[in-house]
Image 1 (spheres, rainbow, N blue to C red):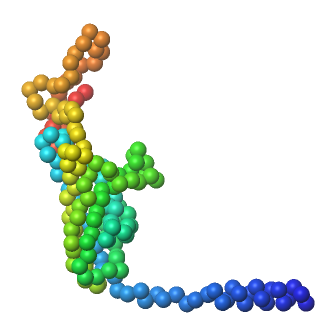
Image 2: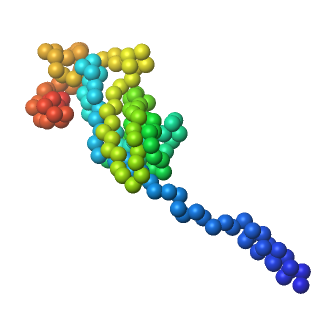
Image 3: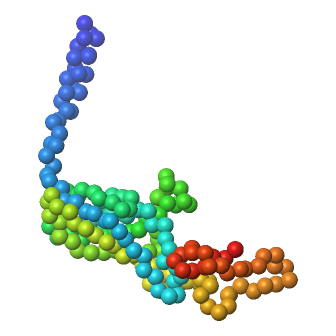
Length: 172
């Protein structure tokens, strides 16, 4: 009899903590990021990148991390301040994704409407010169190179016309 009373009390407490979920949270707005771009200055090297993710913030609160290109819902509407940080695979590993620390945030004020899609095309660029310094950029566009051959050199550089980054040649 003691056990029956104990089980009855235990089951009663379990049902007291249950609450019906409100599945009608509202109609979401949608954000689409079909394309993005990295813009570099002449002294920052190539604009090639491995941006794989977008870290989305609304009013400095992390909304989520989404693979690019992406479509995702948000339960917000009206004017919103959005910040997007470019994300990469840390050490090339898909299981460890991080914000790329050398790019600026893309910041925009957007107008979200329920049940409609807002399209964003973020443009990322490097941090300004006070925060980031490019010491040596060798893009093989000048008449010579910054490399010097020494008596201990065992490798030679050959410029080819193979397309690597647009029309820039490869070095073998």
